[in-house]
Image (tube, rainbow over all chains, first blue to last red; front, top):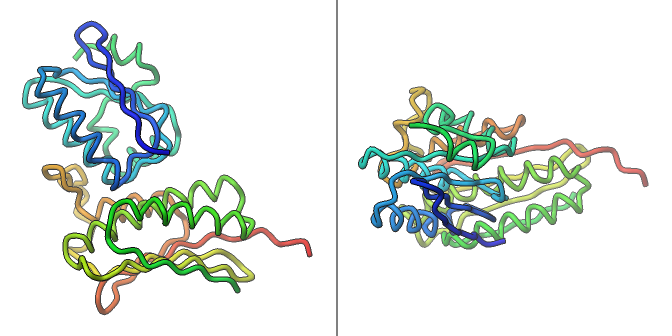
Length: 113
Length: 140
């Protein structure tokens, strides 16, 4: 399955719903999406990863790049993920300490920075 | 003994092909579904790393992928000719994400966390990542 990307606004947050496979081939599309959103002034992002079926370290790099971009504007990037294999990858790489990870979009949107 | 061998020119879309072939070979070998999924993630990670290294440093050289089945298990080897870089172990993985580039060591850390039976070997020209899973006994 290819990568699917949709975004919507919830209050002052922008929710990006990612589905499919984030790998060395599709990661540039996610990077472009995050760059476009930040360029348009969306500095508080929630990336919903519940429909992600594959994630490699290239995808991790894009998420870290997105975090750095929003931080440059005093923004935030929160992840929504309950899939054990993806959580394991975040734990292995120490990125659980870098990204706030939430169990639902509602929880991430309600979280204060 | 059954072996599937792939040679991937270092283009990102071929990583997906390698994942699909690996999954098909693993299913055919009788690997349980949970481990087939583990193989898909690990093979994908190993190929992403190798393809990115070749694209940057050896664009004319293919990445080799072997999936080998024998009486005791299933072995996947991803063989690259990329630079090996400094050894891992500085412990600060966040520092390995610079700009939009990911240090190849992140990939090796992910692989080490995903798969129990893994060997990462420096070769004359690059690195071989060997991943191994036991196969359940077959009823004949």
